Image (cartoon, rainbow, N blue to C red; front, side):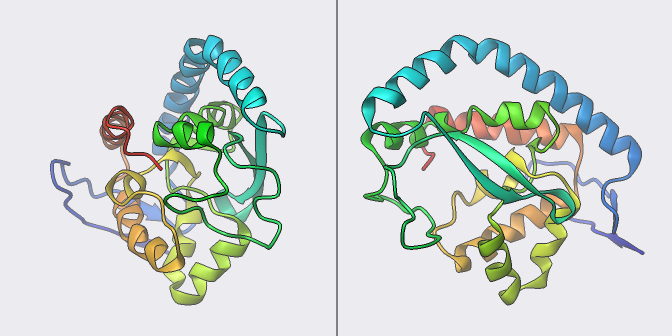
Length: 219
């Protein structure tokens, strides 16, 4: 069974790829994986000195580990560990799962700076290199939030047919979601991405992400 999506995006040539129920077809999947390997390795090598500096600042800025790991749901609903530089105080979720929001008191001052420029996401290049994530793809959520969204719309389950990404069309067009309603709005853009997947589109989304970072419009 196949689902054909024919969607035109602003400034993005229409591409009528077919997304199978089992995921991307093999040629697209191989090209995307090769691109991910090259891009993530180059990023890791370039950022290596900065990893040390960021780690030191994170360590002295607040009590707790430098890296933060959390279980997220990946391709084919398989859980994996996502890594970030810790941007919150310890015990930030002692009362249960809670999405981050603007001016969140759980976020440290240094963490707020990292989030603004998405520095906290840098460790995820290792996730990409080792295959649990892609450079571009729908942002992965925790199991709790995934099921909360699917209560409202089963369309969200389609995102699990591809690897989650460090950045996504939904991320650059809508931004981080603070609640389930905003997750549903962001879903529209991620579904558009699934219907138009190509390396050209991935590169455009990366460039859009760079612009967001340079403008300090991260969260």
